[in-house]
Length: 572
Image 1 (cartoon, rainbow, N blue to C red):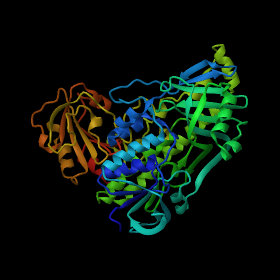
Image 2 (cartoon, helix red, strand yellow):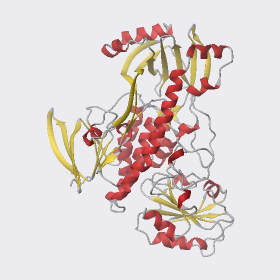
Image 3 (tube, rainbow, N blue to C red):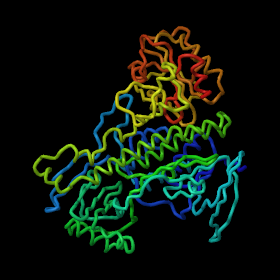
Image 4 (tube, rainbow, N blue to C red):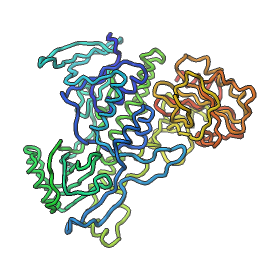
């Protein structure tokens, strides 16, 4: 067995997020990428609020937000007067921030920039991506998964055979890992929904960072110019029944692309000065029949392909990896049985199935809309709701309400077992009561009463999101009436395996401090403003002491009010 126990195949967002999560857990990981150079291209630029929360836990969100820019508006230009905007609208629904939802606005950042940020943080933890290194075979037995790998050294191919505890395929929609496992990629390919995508430097378009430009002639073909994080750099998307995909695919030179852009927009002032990347895209709507086989897993595009409508792909891929990483870490450390890994598929498959459903529905609505009639309605202020709905992404697409309430490994001692939700509403709804399996809310305005020297924070902490960690569970022990009443729950936590839980005692503003078991916890907060108790649906005056077990992926593993409830979660 190789000293590095996990092999990650593929260095896109899913593979890098998985590797970084594992490294944060102190688990050595090897990352291989068959391409000789790091990926370029804007590709999936939309970074949703839930992904920013995950990347906050991973320590990369500040870099992502600094490099990215706010989600822009859509501007539709008059095909009869291509210099005149006849309709503008938001691409995403505006949602105000709240104490429990501090991030409600995503950012736009090209995938190649995003990946560079993830690689920087991986390298800071002594990780690296091995380019020009290809997985060509897998064999498994009860003790591990053996990888046959070919890499290029000084221009020559070198073959190696290495055994790992686990292998994770993050190698894209054409995944070699998925094919080696013999997993069917179930779904459809829609040739009628094709686009030709060009990343290029463009002159003649203003307000690069503020706007998404849509310059369209929809009778035969259309074009979208989308701003990027780099001034003067745009993603150009061609679509429509009369776009000559064959010529673009076979030639793809700057002159060919420029001529098509000018023909559609009828604007000679918009000039392409350099093409940096281009590719043809067609709608693949597919999901693997399984997300793992034995000791080999697939994440991201290797497990599911989808329409780009809704911007869910990159974000779902990162969530796949964040869900799987902490489970792999516990298992390879010997802190959890291998059966825990089965929950990755149990939790992610329903979410991905719903993601495919809502993004395909959005694609169908965009495809069906009669643009010429929509433009006419816009001119007469008679645009209807279906026009806006086809372009605007509602708050569901933020992924903040995703849940795993049906999961086999979550527990809620407050409710009977038969009250557990089914998988019918995996994307969740705004304003529902908080249950085990939901996203763990933030809570600001906390006052630190005491903290152990071993506590992770290096500066005073005033919010829960700065406590949650991808490397361990967080046990939030809520004690509304007195510190003393939390003692039985803390006793139960103290008897567990060291390193499993970071223990936080949260006292209400009116709770008695007498007999406070401060020595049994890592951190003690006073919830002066009440955001923690309210956010977790607990009554600061009347509820009994309650422990909320927050998983390393920022989801609630359990609500428990007794030692039995805690043990029930750990035995799930």
